Structure formats: structure tokens, C-alpha cells
Image (cartoon, rainbow, N blue to C red; front, side, top):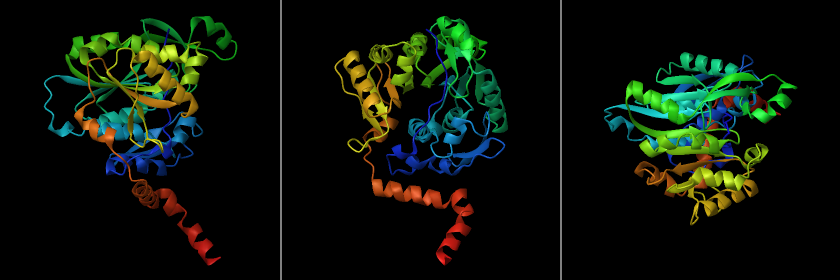
Length: 359
């Protein structure tokens, strides 16, 4: 099986903390996509300009209202002791499904001592990614034009911006009758990491973000040696519909993903459990998988992010505060209102509000 690559969209309404770091990235939603297909976002107080595939690109436009705030919040806690860390070897973070580079920018900003490997399979999207890394001076990020799976080889790739995906060999003829596919190098994460370690001597891999479309099991199957050696946290998109659309049984697929893990957490609070990281209960991988898929379909609209703690590992101390934090909803809404009033949209609409008051 081979992996398709995409970037997930984070919903603005899922905010669940009053700590100021909860709103890091909250100001992102005031960005506006320009007619030229560009948007400016704030990450940790720094302004970044991102070019999209086009001005009407779905992912680019989603950043106006639903940027990757959950991922930014997670990184702000995970790397909060970054300035005090003395590295003796290379520190690596992986962004599998980098799209136009927003999540790679988050990783690089919150963990500047690390080398970020930003993997993107779409040929045209990869060129946009490279330009965005250059224009934002993200020199610690290395773009890799690869599809990721459980073996090395060549894959057929159907490009459709954030929804591009690797096509199974049995489906190539049917896809090509509608649109052409292109050859893309297919690699396992284990082979990528092994090559990097041989050249630079990797000390740690703290986090692997896998944001794909229905082929998470293949991606994780292809990084088992990396997980065993470095024990990274995994930030993984769970999309039951995408799993089914690729011919997989969601429960069996998710069971493969969480097999042997120490802990699994859902990202984002709910009215019943507002904690940002919500533990998934279960006595074994099957019960965990059943719980995840049930809630993913019934409550999550077949989409959510999960955090997986690898076998033998534990949630880092820097994330325990985030895991147990209970939000103050009123304070969170007040903070969002403050951010909105400081936005470009609020300033641009000021004449209309004054006119309405006079009328």
C-alpha cells in the first residue's frame, strides 16, 4: 500500500484553552487571500507570507478562518523548553504532507534548533512549497519531493492541491482516463531517516506529523525502525471516510496504526470533555481503534487529529499541562474578540460600522 499526501484543515470553533499560547495562531484567521493567491499569517508573533496554488485554492482559503492553530498550540507546549536545550547532534522533525509550508513554518519557528524535513508529493505543490520556504527564509527546512509509503519504488500521483494522492496500481487506468498521473519517487520514512542519519548523525526525532488521506497505515508501517530507535510522538490525521474510500476497513486500519502504542489522545476539546488532549480509553489496540472510529464518524465528521505516544514512551512533561488544562470559555471568547478587533478585516470594515450607526 502507498500513501497519499495532504494537509488537514483545523476548525476555528475547536479552540479549548485560555492560556495565551492557546491563541497563538489565533490571529491567523484575520489573514485575507489576495487576488494574487497569497496570504499573510502570524506564527508566534512573526509574519509569514504564503503563496498558494491559486487564489481559489481550498486549503489556502481555509487559512482565513481555520489555520493550523491546534498544531501550533501543541508545538508551543512541546518545545517550550527549546531555548534551554543543549543539542549534541542533529535534531530532526518530519512534516509528511507539507503542502504549501504552513506546518513546516510552525515546526521551524517553535523548534529553531531542529532540521525539519518537509515531504510533499505533488510536483506543482512542491514548487510552491519551495518558493514559500525561500521567501520566508526558512533555511532549517529541507523540502523533499517524495510520496511516502511502506516500500521504496515509484508511485503514480494524481495532483489536486491538498487533495492530491498516490493512486493504487489497480486504479491507474481509471484515473488516467480522466486526468493524467505523474511518476513520483516513493520512499519509506525509515529509508529517509537512515540516509539522513548516515550523513548528519541524528540525535533525536521529537515529532513526526503525518497528514495524509486514507493511507496512514502504510506510512506508519514504513517508519517502524524510526519509531523504535527515536520514539517520536506522532501527530496523525484520522479520516475514516478516506480509509474506506481506499478499500480499507477503518477499525482494522486504525488498529494497525495504534498497535503497541503507550497512549493515544484526541486533539481538541468537546462540551463534555474540554481538555485539549483527550485520552482514548481501551484495554488493547482493538478497543482503542473501535472507540476512535466510532467517535470519528459519529462526532468528528470523519475527520480529526490524534496524537500517538510510541511503545514504551510517555507524554512529555511539557504536554501534561496542556492535557489536563480545563478552559474558561468566556475568557477564550473574550480573547478571540480582542484578536478580531486587532485584525485587518475589523479595520477595513470600520467605515461600514460607522455608517450603520448613523443610519
